[in-house]
Amino acid sequence: AQRVTQPEKLLSVFKGAPVELKCNYSYSGSPELFWYVQYSRQRLQLLLRHISRESIKGFTADLNKGETSFHLKKPFAQEEDSAMYYCALNRETSGSRLTFGEGTQLTVNP
Amino acid sequence: NAGVTQTPKFQVLKTGQSMTLQCAQDMNHNSMYWYRQDPGMGLRLIYYSASEGTTDKGEVPNGYNVSRLNKREFSLRLESAAPSQTSVYFCASSDDGREGLRAKNIQYFGAGTRLSVL
Image 1 (cartoon, helix red, strand yellow):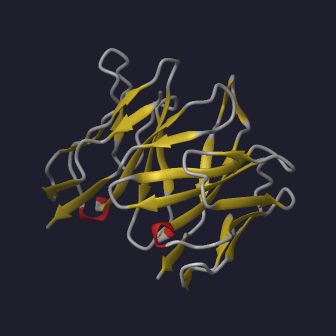
Image 2 (cartoon, one colour):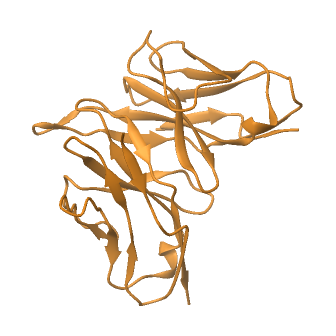
Image 3 (cartoon, chains in turn blue, orange):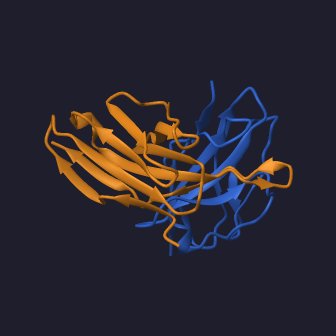
């Protein structure tokens, strides 16, 4: 069965500090992984996808198939990064059927 | 470009009442979804529709029904609301277009409906 685990429900860092939001998955096929973000009073939106291998708002995430992880990292956190972050796994070979993790609430303190 | 629009934004029901949550998208997406969001549990898929005229159960379909009215609209109905259905409900649609050799598989979400069942 497919499963996505985000071990930290809450994460608090100071502005300028590095931040890492952990995501582990279990899936027997070839995974397609995403990070979605929900800022306060805004709708859930895509942050980045592993296949794009891009940096969005200073965030990066690398798929580690050996450790079955897709951790989200940013070297210098900003206050505007405070939000709920969800890791998600697409379990379809075609189309989109996402399994979401439990979410991590990130707070960046001034 | 409105994207995904949900109505209502808030609703309070009494146990046993029924209601329909409406969702419409203007992005010409084939696939649409209904999720519920509960603290500590992330988003869980209730139902989805891969195309107009088709619907399938997700992880937590009990107590819900859906209708894919046309390509734009996908509604979620609670026939007899229960307190366990108190949640925030999100509708989404997905861009399943291709990007090179791979499908994009990006989901776009509505603003959510906050439902309380007393």
